[in-house]
Image 1 (cartoon, rainbow, N blue to C red):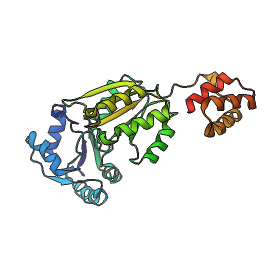
Image 2 (cartoon, helix red, strand yellow):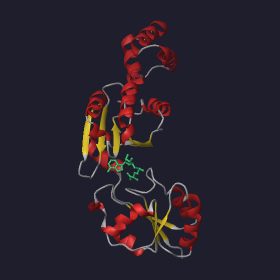
Image 3 (cartoon, rainbow, N blue to C red):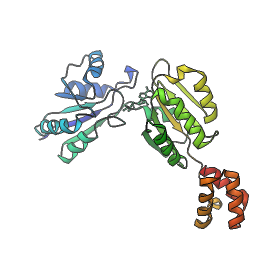
Image 4 (cartoon, helix red, strand yellow):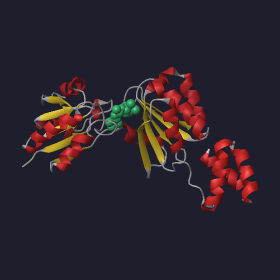
Length: 278
Ligand code: SAM
């Protein structure tokens, strides 16, 4: 009989968010694979857990997983934790879990804190359908390209961002999504200086720029999706093509006016559709 790999969520700041089940599991397994053993030592010490740990992080996960699977297959139970929150969510663990499942090892999730879910639950934006983008590329060009691709996303979308890039990221959002889109910043969630601020992007940029404290700590951004176009706003593929070509080089108003002349479509209708694409 092989053992079980428990994927255990740990708090994202507030230690009271550690679940009793997570504590039981971490005490009972024979080994805890941790993203950073020194970081996790503080958590384990706080809860009086003496289970041995081993490092499993982005740089050694592939090799390490093979050895861990051997032990799991031999019947040992093991836990996987990351520095904070749920493993595999912008954290290591994917290779280990995949290998475990391929090897027929039971994988058991022990749910708990996760920054994106915490932010979404308090954002007040539609949560029936949403999508998570993880971290955007650190360099401006890559980030702007991703934001362009996300501009037409109709579901609520979320990202993690490093505090020193927060303002740049919001400024890019302002340029690409326009000033009115609602964005919620969830900062230092569950911690002493927890802040949850929702506002149209233009306002949020000013607010973050004016207060350097808002550019510290850990943060999640929750972004309102683009409202779905009413059915009568759906253009024919040819009209859409003309509008797209013009929008590549012209401001929205001019592109809509010219597209109306070329296609005979109503200018106002084209303008509304073009706004959604800008
Ligand atoms: N696995 C974690 C989870 O379940 O949320 C995420 C790990 S990822 C490496 C770390 C990022 O998560 C941070 O840079 C930040 O964007 C977000 N994050 C983690 N803790 C947070 C908190 N307390 N408040 C806001 N964002 C947080």
